[in-house]
Image 1 (cartoon, helix red, strand yellow):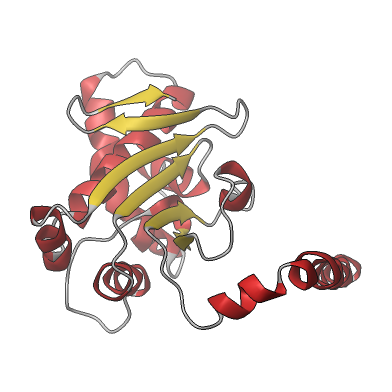
Image 2 (tube, rainbow, N blue to C red):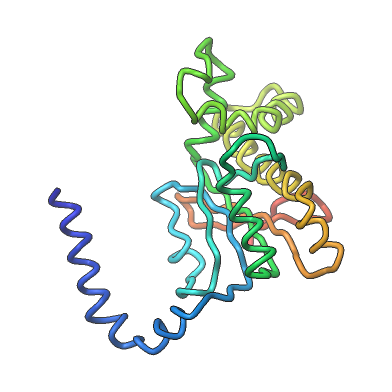
Length: 212
């Protein structure tokens, strides 16, 4: 309770300082949003997109989920939160860029790796195991390429490969295909290292991540 009350105190500081001094900007944003960039990031509390990318309110459309994953395009089932956000970003907000932003020591990636190394079934969790199983193939590709990798290297390489997998999944959304064909949409891959602060960017032509 004490920490939650601290958050309320932070809000009061925001209202009296930033909101009051920029009230006209917030009133303008209340009429609608027109971001040019969408970021699909992880819900990990250590990865603050606002701080890392210095995002101002209204500048970037953000969706966060476990392990910053884009699921395969499918119409079955009833609830598709990330897919709905992608559709809204492209069809309604007309974003020009989508960036998949992963990070180091990702808990979702770790859960997938651990499930493959033990007899523990992924369905022991109600939702997590099924969700992160989307990157099982990416993890297997890393292991198949080299069977002498350390656990840390498998984790890091799977984080990068999972970003590529999400980008591949994005390409299968019909409205993404259409926007890319019209050259009105560009897709990017990013990876942030929490411990070093380094940001890597995917070179789509070479299919490798380079330090920025």
